[in-house]
Image 1 (cartoon, helix red, strand yellow):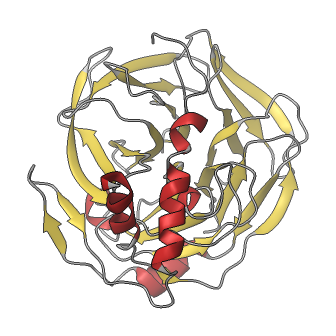
Image 2: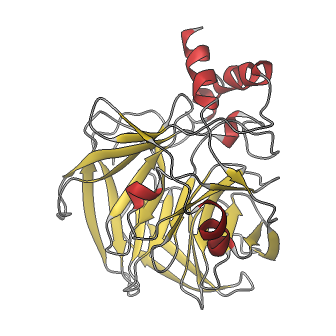
Image 3: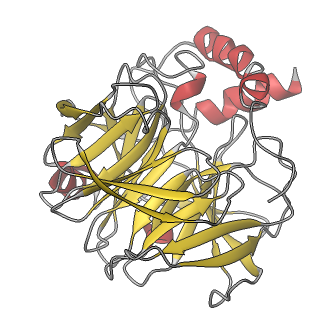
Length: 336
């Protein structure tokens, strides 16, 4: 009962300015090698796609018709890669941060250059293991990790100092994001709980807009000064991404659109056009009042959204959350 009350309270703290933009299908990924799309990035000419997990680092370079042009690989065998980001210099950052059972002593980032050379950076959390599927890379190549939490707020971490290879480099908690359940359909765990689990992240090319996604929603945060931690304390714009089988991939394209993708075979890449301007225009200047936490970081505590679901619906979502542990106990090996 305590856990149920805790998640109900967390679900009541969402802030968002809802947007009317609808995702439009751009193309479908027919290549059978990409069946567990988990990470997505873009450079204006190509899209970069990455599967969940795998036994070697592999990034597929797609054209804008979803056709694979080539692959970038490295023989490094990761534990559980979950997200992908691209630096301004062309380096692809793979977040080897999945930890469904919360038992890893370290997680890792792999910096993969276009020629296939990879550098390993191990990381440690200040407060024990977390399952993380969202990587945000700022314009100075500082990585931020956002945890996937079925109970309570998603936690935000970044390196406490300069990354060292192979490390480990300690992380520090710099914030938290609370989301409230929505009724948007989609995802593997049903409406409600799937809408609060953070499954991916992205930053646009100039670092001024940040996106977090769940199985059914995208949240767009304005970052006019490039400060990701500050951006995640602002009121976001919410864009629904309905009816994705297991939506985990998200990226900004050079035209300001937001790309989304899902695990599964022959699934589409969809675009929310004008997403960058949408974030700047509707939500970018509205800042919440961060509430200090015991560790000195801040958590946005926004006003309640109008038209919210009933407490009964939240209770159902809380019960659904109890099934999440079983669902996410699938895969991976016992050591990184």
